[in-house]
Length: 233
Length: 142
Image 1: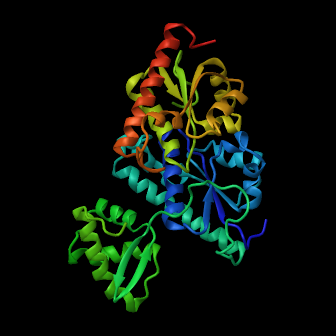
Image 2 (image 1 turned 180 degrees about the horizontal axis):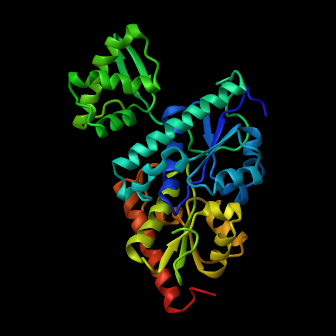
Image 3 (image 1 turned 45 degrees about the horizontal axis):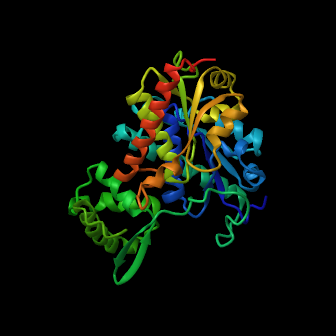
């Protein structure tokens, strides 16, 4: 495996019978679509048995992080047994502790604790991706992902475009960030500007001298989002 | 459920599809069946447990009738149940359900639209009917 040309693989257990499995899958998607869209790929765990050789070679061609819902660690065990050693193994219950108790399997029942749990686990996975990449050395983004199997739908989610002092800036996953802000009751007026900027800065680099421009552009886009216009998509 | 399914339950096993909306539909259809349409008569199981070879999960699919719901033609759920020695009473492909909904926009890998829920509920109804038939014919346990 060449660390210079590969992305980090994330394998979720997807545990269909438990809420933590749903959290593992949604958190993985959040990392793929928003937090580390250019550095990560995924694969359905059961493909190690049902798929072909390229899919079974996944963990040999990508440094891989597993994210399991429970202590049975099916994703870690299954990946190492059928594909190759993993770089890191996370467990949702270990990250969330008792906070997973109020979560649900189905999106029909999804509530604020579910959303917060997904964000918490996604941010933990993203930190682990950064750690794996740091250990792997420099990457070539242009060549990344050119080898091995990967999910056909792991391309980045649509971003949001802002015009800041005449320049167009693209922020990956801006609608999702606004959704989180709305869930956290950040107001769509000047009193929410600082919180909006802080939320965006977690996922997007903003230089200190750019902050004033970002504040006003983000507020205008957030107001459109809250009113249903959602022009950033 | 934990590892032991409800006694006499038909096991409804969705795929773990993480890349497309079809995997999400397979799981939401499963939850509609196990939680709303046929609770007590049906249950589900983590497919990853079969990948791991968990003895209780393997025994569960061998001793209960199984209905698999797969998001794509790779049919991970159906294949993994069969490889574990389980009996697949019915294998459903989500894509088949879309033949009656051309042009539908079902949503994404993380959220269903109204179109997506319509397809999901149709699949769930089909699974619930099959589970009822299996119970009526006493084909639930072998």
